[in-house]
Image (cartoon, rainbow, N blue to C red; front, side, top):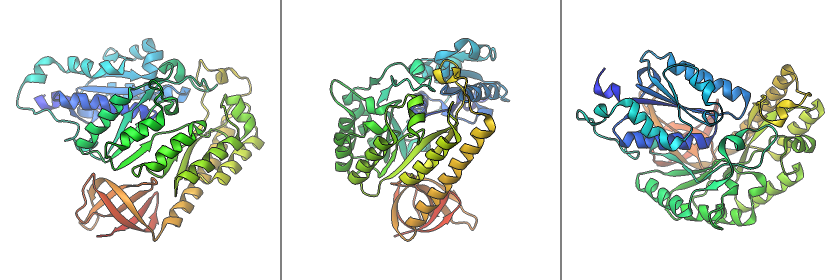
Length: 428
């Protein structure tokens, strides 16, 4: 095995955007120490960053570990993340090449140990900084908070992540400045329950102000609970030109009875009022959401209520999940579990609605111009280069690059819908 192949690390991330941000931090540390990101089939070490939000998530995590173990390069597999925090023994039992490290701050150092000190310092391999690696040139996740104490009845995350904890505001501001200096054009602020940010009285609005001061071109939030859309936060968003006209606000159900059973702390009317306030503060705001289909005890009538509510709100997209029992949560113990065929049918109806809402939204933007952050450029079928990226309101757009490269902000006229993308023409 060559020295370069011996330094290859693959990172498989499951679950939420906080996991992605933490995986990016691990990757950044490894790149700086002379490793490089590789495909699983060629990696000496595979890191699996797990999720445990549902029983299905646990199954996917175990499958990912087994897949990594079966790789032709016979890698060591480092398992971290929420499932690692809750079920170390079960993960360790998956294979003798599995090492479990729940503390993500220790993963990069552990991987270095597994790669071997002699490989780390030999040859002429030059360490690669995060800013120089193409994977980090456009959008970066900046974790500002961890933990949750909401204890929704279907969710194990508070047990895996602990109570809310804020990253110090000065540290957030410094990290944002570093990212901008390294070429990052868009920063996504992430956290498990980001609205609970509290650093000695500084709240999420102060975080938005601090990150906007870095001069970054775009700012997003990964997700925000509806009741955390406070007047102060909305004012901070509206005052920051970099803040994108897109919010992801989890709904979970459009029935007050189901919301109550879930342990959610708002009603449908309260949810709608917060979104009305957000749309009043942020012109052209698009809101996406999460919906959980087939929660225990949900009736067919309540499922229809959720469909009707989602259509009335006019979400840009629904991220639809079928309820999956997670042992250790109150919902898993309920006797009134919804049958799998009914869950599947309800999820299908929600996804069909999401498709219709998305198509309507895309059609309404045709003929307009939009700023697109180019994320990748690839060869097209006729030899021209095709750029792909996202608008500020989170539409996926493809267009003839005309020299645009990754990380560039391009003005594009939106001309046609094709599948899940809009096609555009660059305005030069």
